[in-house]
Structures are given as C-alpha cells and as structure tokens.
Picture (tube, rainbow, N blue to C red):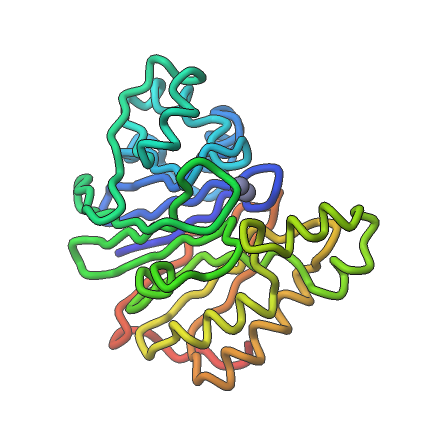
Length: 269
Ligand SMILES: [Zn+2]
Ligand SMILES: [Zn+2]
C-alpha cells in the first residue's frame, strides 16, 4: 500500500510525505518541527517511519523545520549541493546527503531522482520518488516555467503534486506592485493555473491516478479557480483519476496511490 500526504502547501509552508509498506519519506519540511508533528498526527502519518527528509530548495516555506526534525528523527537531509551551502549554517547538526542531478538516491524502499527547476533559489529541484513496488510520485513546485528536464522527470508518474500558483487575471489585478507581479509570473517565479493545466495534459498518461494542485497563492488564486482550469484540461486529456487541491492549513491524506491496473476510474472531477 502506497499513500501520499500533503501536510500543507502554500507560501507559508510546504510538506509532503510518501508512505510505502511501513516506511515513509518527507519531501520538504516548511513548517516548524512541532507543526509538522501536529499535522502528521491529524492524518495518521507516523513520523517514526520517516527515513529521510528531501528538500527541493532552501526557501523557508520548504526548509523551515528540516534541521530540528531531522535531528529529532535521526534521519538525513537530502538536498542539492548548492542548496546545502545555504542551509548548512542553519542546521549544523544535520546529517547531509547530496542529491545529484543525474543520480539516484536509494532510501529504504524509495529511489529519489531529481532535476533542476527554474526558480530564484541556489539549486532548486523537482523530485520523483519511486517505491520498490514501481509506484512513482512527482513533486514539482516553485517552478517558473516547465523545462524539458522537468517534463522528462514527470513522465510515467502514478501521482503528481504540481504547483498551480496563480490565476493570470487575479495576479494582474492584484495589489502586488508590477515588479512583484513580473517576478511571480516570470521564468524564475511560479507556475500559473493555465501553465499547470498545459503541463499536466503533456505528462498525462493512463497510469496517472492522482493529481494534487499545490502552492496556491492566497492573494492571486482560489481552490475553485485552480480546480476548474485544471479539471477541464485533464478531462479533455482523458484523465480518470482523482484531482485534489492542497490547502495551506488543512492537511490532505492519506491519498492511496495505486497502479493503473488496480485503479478505479473516478469520474465527475
Ligand atoms: Zn521558493
Ligand atoms: Zn515555495
């Protein structure tokens, strides 16, 4: 049994987990260690089964609780080398394992692969976690634009957590100054609902069973807008899985992830 948890997602914190046969791996730890513990408890995720914390990049909304939590759980922190250069002074006692761009990291029943993303951080990554049962979960957020490398990493997934940060119109009409609007919409910023929908149509295949929209902007998006934009595109692509929208405050999960053959078609997005 494989399950996905999104303990929260947005500009004030991101944390996901993949659980498989009694083992788990955390992807990002952007809340305090105590808050991650609280959210894990509400979903039934046992943090005692976590064998590593993998971080996409050093921004606080992805790394805030990583050092303390890693020490408490006695597990390593995996990041790109450039990311670690920024984080090490903040978590001097953490055991670090470098995550290379073209290499695989094996952690218990999981294999983690990564690719670079276009974002204003030291060495940001999108991640794919594959279980020894062949189920593959991708996490891609803080993504200015989907590069060829990201598209390649996100092929053949069973489940994906993908950024749907803003609605183009809500961003343009927001109270953000033009310079901030340009940064958010720019190639080192964040993915819009429309861009997320286009990317999902591109990487869609019959085995994709779960899509979670993540990192929604509070000012420039709503769960309804993100869902509506993506659901209609996915429906046209023939998606028969489940579509979720992650929330900043309410944890999601456990969301069961199955192989395509064992998956029930769920219509009515
Ligand atoms: Zn970021
Ligand atoms: Zn972020």
